[in-house]
Length: 285
Ligand code: PDD
Image (cartoon, rainbow, N blue to C red; front, side, top):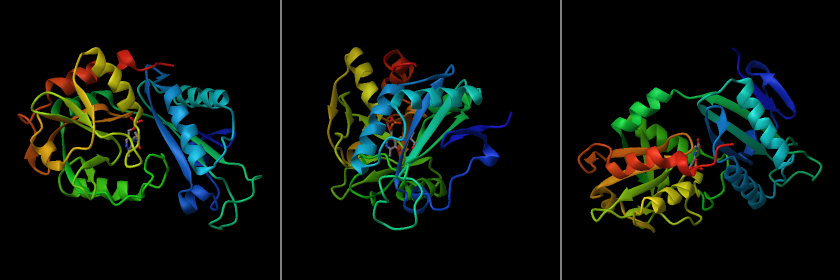
C-alpha cells in the first residue's frame, strides 16, 4: 500500500507530496511540528498536542491555517488512509511560501500544513524497552527557546548522530551548570537512590513534553515521590534508574550514561511500571 500525506488541502501519494522550494520551513526552519502516538488507530493525547501546537504557533506569530476541529479530522484521516494501527502521526505548520526574506511575509501568505503518518514496529519498541538504552552527554548548544516545538532541530540531529557514532542510542544535552536539560527528542528522568523521581522543571530550556505531563498523573496515582528540578550529570551517574519520555517511545529505560552503568544495568521497576501504566492516564481519541 502506498503511503498518503496531506499537503495544503490535498491527500497525496507520498511520491507527489511536495512543498514549494521557497517554503519558509525549508529555507529558515520557520515552522513548528507535533508528533502524536497512534494506538489501535486512535490518536493519543491529541488535545494536549494541539494545545501545545497552538502555543508554539503563538510564540512565533504564525496563524493556525485551519480550525483545530478541521485539523483533528485531517489527522484522523491520514491515520486511516495509511491504515496505521500502532505508530505516529506527524504534523508541521510553517509560515508559508514567500520570496526569501528574513522578515515575516505579508499577512496574506497562508501557512503551510503537512501531515504524515507512519507505522512503528511494536515488538521492536517493546524489545528495546526491555533492554534499555545507552546515552551519551553533550553540551547543550541549542537556542534559548527550545520550549517552542520548532522544526529547527540541527543540534538535535547532530547530537543523535554523535550518539550513534559512539555506540549509544541517544544523547542528553547538558547546560553550562552541568545539569541535564533533555534528550535529543525526549525528556529525561532519574530515580534517586532514595527513590524520588526527578525531572527538570519546564522552563525555556526544555520542551514541556506531553508524555512528561501525563506521566505526572501516573506518578501521583502510584504514590511515588517526584521533584521538578535541575539535576547534574553526576547525579544521573549515581541514580537508581533513568529513563526518557516521548510520544513515540512513551517511557524508555536508560541503562548506561557515558559508559557508566545505571543501577544494575537493567531497566528498573519504576520505569517499567510507569511504562505499563501510562495509557491509563493518557487520552485516547
Ligand atoms: N519529540 N524534548 C524534545 C526535544 C522532543 O523533541 C520531544 C518530542 C520531547 C517529548 O515531548 P512529547 O512527550 O510531547 O513527545 C521532549 C518528538 C517525539 C519527535 O521529535 O519525534
